[in-house]
Length: 259
Ligand code: PEP
Image 1 (cartoon, rainbow, N blue to C red):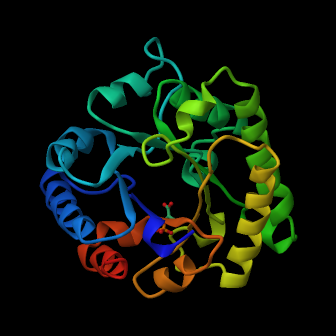
Image 2: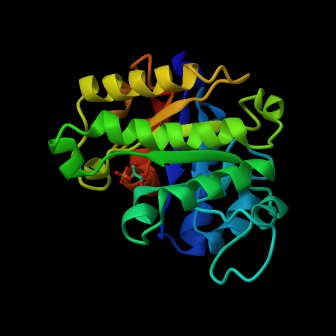
Image 3: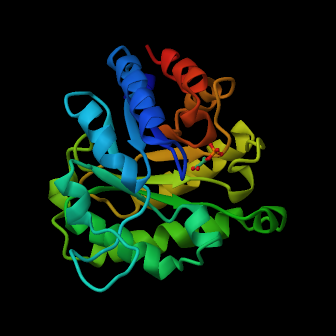
């Protein structure tokens, strides 16, 4: 993918107060205007309406960090795709390793979230990745392939109008490869490792012959110093950025590299 079409997705996690978030959203939006990449922001739920006001006429997409599959009902603590759409969200992240590891979300639940979100017209960033132990046991390909294939199998069988996903700028199905051991740790996978896992994921995706492309992002300690060399890799379609995305200096420097 050409550098100009790369996706920079910012996962703000459980951070920022309203004023900090609106200032950061304004800053990112101004930078994004001069930037060739497609910029996405995922603030916490309470920040979303505030960020939405700042971003309503901007090039930046905003979305949530998780989503339920149903429109409403007795699901305490959850949020529905239609609630997110009502405030202008265009996507949700699902299956982040913090959801899988800390909150025990199973692969099955994550697939339900992803498909529910797509059925209601929200784009999805599905996170996959191996733990440190799995990495050390050389199980990366096995683990990541299982996570990707189990989702794509269900997607292929789901009653979703896949044709409506052909415009990847509006409705996209995105996979983010995030080695768990690289998230928030400062440890980054080597470019060789990243390229090899991304190539595997792309070759799995190709077998499904979907009528749209499925971009594959890398996430895990991406910062202002390593972003460019990772995103220069042909098989890397963008980045999912956590810590560096809530620091205006760092995210500003990353966005500047795409202007
Ligand atoms: C993430 O939260 O998806 C992430 C990649 O975090 P960090 O960039 O802080 O490692």
